[in-house]
Image (cartoon, rainbow over all chains, first blue to last red; front, side, top):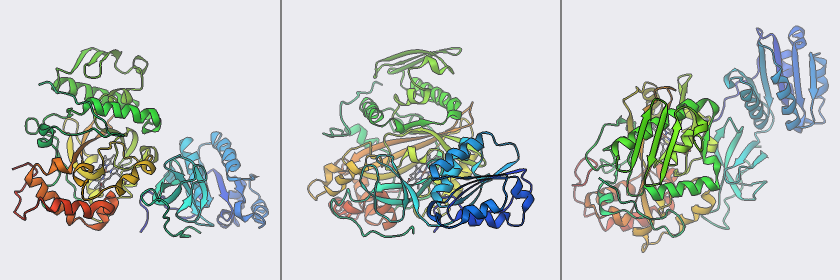
Length: 197
Length: 346
Ligand code: HEM
């Protein structure tokens, strides 16, 4: 059953009417970007791409993106630095710019949250989920974020509580909710399930 | 009619209890012997004298103690009170709604004098005397929503209406049944209700939202919701669940009467005049099983409701671990006699 608070990622498509394309991609998200700009030299020439290879380091995705000959390509070392660069670009974005996001869910979420801060309506952002199903989870107790959670329960990387990943998603935080799993049964943990590989 | 405010606690030594009058006026939420989610919304009309529906905002014997508990929660966790910047007009609307209602219906305790936008508010039970300029946040010691809800029982959400939806863009939430304002703020009606089982498929939320989008000014509505809580703890937040969750393991056949509480939320909704936002109030009432069974009809009925509750609802409400022990205890008060229709005691 779909999670009602979780966004739907319909897949990237090219907005032919946009004057500028601002593209944020992570890891395998590069492939979705390549697919929409392949053979569209004019569109690519008006695109700014921010890319962080993440788990796809070692593949040649960045070179292929460069071959598109975009107006600018920023290859960044981490999701955080990619978002900092994106924020700078959003601050100066002109009218008629379309925002795209492709990659793991935690990254898409951060792009949407950056867009929100710059007045971009979340429904106007084109998104595609690529790569692992790993979740970004906020601990409801200490409020710390743990990235790339692939199993439930897991240990909060900040306070160390054993957290169960609840099927509840906040767009503002770009995260699922983590709630302590064993406080009613101290010392007894449910089996760890790798649900989000 | 002066209220005798009780000195009591909702944590640590848990001295909270209800007077016999408070028991009789308890908003018992079951009008039948079984329970399922429904669009149970009705006009928020003045109800019977002394009932919690007599006035739009109900102030009772627990007022002072509840406000003390709220102050403690906010001191430990300021994220329980949040408001997005565009909600400031709605905050002032809320100040007006609550001050007007409290002063009008409890004049022995609260007084409001208005001279244009120069207002004078006196809250005797909490010892507050405040002159301020309506609309000028700098004239209050804290932002307007926080200011007035530190002085009014119940949690509050302010909902912005846009794109045919309601958005939870402000609130103060210190007495909640296990949900997080900090996590839910900014969500829309369907998103914040995502974790609720069954009701989405019954179409409850679609119909409720459609109804609320058309809510008219001056025609508030209300509904009841319920859950159960171990010990009279108001702050059953997810934030602190790692501290209170263990309480659910402490129920024994000997202590059910004192430990297990029915928790009823009287929820009311008003359209606000300046902002067109909606205020959603969630007023929690607690009653321990020992107190509940002093009303024979409620004892019989609650036994049957809890016994036959669908397991998904019991799990969602977090009752599964102590449900059977509680049903067994309640069965002593159920002789199988038929119960009369309606909520009120016979
Ligand atoms: C518009 C104001 C409302 C707000 C802010 C609100 C908020 C909430 C929240 C935060 C929850 C907890 C969800 C969770 O588990 O995280 C909840 C539960 C629920 N809400 Fe609402 N709600 C509103 C109106 C309504 C209305 C009009 C209905 C009418 C049918 C409704 C029906 C329910 C039900 C059935 C539950 C599950 C409660 C339980 O089993 O304990 N809500 N609501």
